[in-house]
Image 1 (cartoon, each protein chain N blue to C red):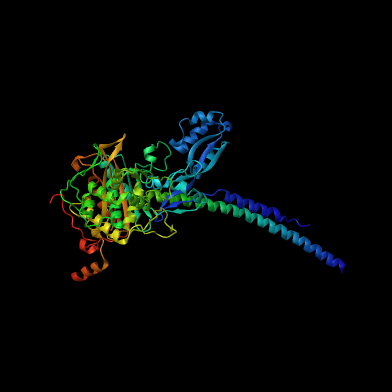
Image 2: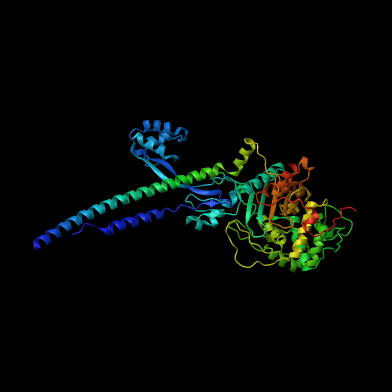
Length: 516
Length: 96
């Protein structure tokens, strides 16, 4: 007769382990440097059963002593009512709980809850997204990687909080200066597609749950579709050089506007009376020249390269808020020409960043990602040749560094920058507004050997006195680009260069001024 | 002779029962202790998590920048502040 009952004890033990497994705490989200972006912490709520309280009035006074102004206003009524459940104070410490227990009333209880906290507040609001009351993701990374997070796996993002902060600050400054509606900016590694920063303004504090307007929640950088104007001339030029239809020394007449119909014509702001070549068309940002290049390419080539650049599908990154570009699919030559300089094609800033990276990194296809450790499977397709890419780099360098360039206020004396400005009349109520603009800037640095690409878009900047009543990209965004790159390059470990333009190894082009 | 062996067997059975009781008792005690410790560990882990969140909140870039600018009079790194180690040593030897 042995008294031991081994079975029951083992059973108890297994029950215990099961109970442990039940509460899987949602995983954390870290940035590239291990900075905590999102975490789940436990909190205790004080719960009281007022129907069993013996002396509600005394209890109320003592509660007020412990919690001061944290108690709800209607505390007195609630405690003397016949309720069965009343949450008195949220998020209390264990010490306070012990104090409450010492009052000696029955019906005092504590509720354990888990809440999602975002220590960076509104630093990376749109990318991270939010969770609902049950701790399930409802937007951003929280939604797309919900399975991994709810299995208590930690996520490491490629986002750099420091850069994110600088970019957000500079963009906010520029938006406030020009009283703009909204803005978006992206910085991405040009070679492996790791996104260093995405900012969309206006944004919100992820910790707050209520009073968020649709404008705040909307992610302009990945979900917003814009006609991005002259920035798309980069791709028209790349197509022309790659397909060999237009040589870079071929002269094109841009002196007279192209008439499409009686009411419509393609014209330039800066009138150029002599034939110019492709680099000059891009540097002067001539619509007429780009349209003429496009018409010599034809619909087929344009469509082929737009698809290769990824304009025919959503960008597949680790957030749900992405959108499909929309095109003017007309077969009329005017559609071809307008798309070549960025009208009649709506893409997101993320699409533009990706396409710019493809053109400037040597022509290799790229898949943007928000994850630190993601390795992209599959082969890289060569969209453009190294030679085309080098020519485009040289042209974009001149846009910023030549005295005739549209983006010359973006110049940095220590880091060679290249990029293209774009100013678009905003499409409002079925027609293009004459006063309301969308301005964009896309480019790369250091331009002779691109490591990072960036895109900045600002929606509806108003003309200001200090900008001589202008609200074009060269005035609104370009000044911010130089500042931005001077500040983030040391963080990205890019060394300042003291090279002469001739030592950068770029193709040399001579740019003539608008008037000879 | 048989009586002696019977007695010895009886004694050992009693001894074993007692031993078994002791082991089981201490096992249960230890098990309770384990549960307590595990709860304590999870409690402490949660506290660590809370502290980490607190650190992250206090070291958010925007706040650090504000403090560095206002309290420490620090400025952002300019490209001219970044030097090559060879250039610095060259300057040093030229001076001396």
